[in-house]
Length: 470
Image (cartoon, rainbow, N blue to C red; front, side, top):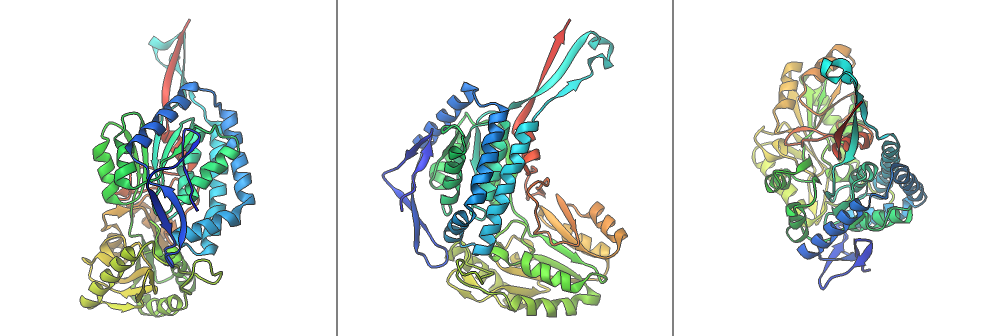
């Protein structure tokens, strides 16, 4: 099945095509055109023309987003199957992503309706007496959006929804491994009434399509979700542009001795292994108090061993494949190094792109499986003796996206909220939880912005001060 890209409201093909394959069995899912710099330039020109027309007011933007949410809710299964096939995400998780995308569009519609400026009290100073001052929210301009493979629908919506609400046309470069969900979302937005040239989709590789998009002088803002290395390279390439980055993590969760261990085990079983751990906030580092470490480790191994691994289209599958065999081999190599370093590894056997869920007991702190982002079905468990030590272990990371704390003590919870150096601190919840309306984002190598439609719209607009003198 050939799925054309979209530039300036028209379908686009190319001489060369990219094969989109199922990560599970390598079967063909679709073919998309391999576009390059000339297509990027055409897409940016179309977006600039759409912005210049100025004929897409707030109420219409809200109506488009509201209608798109309705259409997506009606087609949940269709979109979920697309996600499961191209991303290898278990169908139950793919359905959940689709429903979250509905919410993201609805929240974006709300922001389109309530986008406003503010009145400035000019007579608060002597020089301002007799003058009226106000500030308006103005679209920042054309937006370049680069989305990742792991949430090929909802993370695209987190870029497109707020951009539409803010009044910014977009050139979208989706992940080359999972572009079909993004194209279909844009088609759905156009069906909902979006001007056909408002969003262009440029399919292709990072070097051929992504790099020219970042380097193009017109886009005023670049929004990127992906790896730390690529994100930092984008910053270096576009130093004069506004660059919004959502990057990586090795999310920790602290488990105090008074925690409900059944609840902890159930949540880590989900948070560490859903979508085979391929989430920026997948639970990776479990920090367990020494008093309950042995019991938690034992129960976690049993729980993780019961996870069903297999075909993402099977209703019973809980852990599907990694996105590629290369990704699976990297995780396998990190687990082999942990074994060689003397860590006890339960599970972690690779079969092509599938890896059985792994629990690594008290690994050395310098191992990649502990310090880096695994992005695979792996959880490490490390003992600590007092809360200050646990907070120190959690903070000892290049990342700072989200952290979790399980405790029955309100004082411990509040202390952790103050001292954990993360964009989000979740009490009695694994760090894998995300509500699409929250200010989601991190510190250090985790990124530099906050997503959630209300917060992204602020990033995608700028204040324009207006003063009227009598």
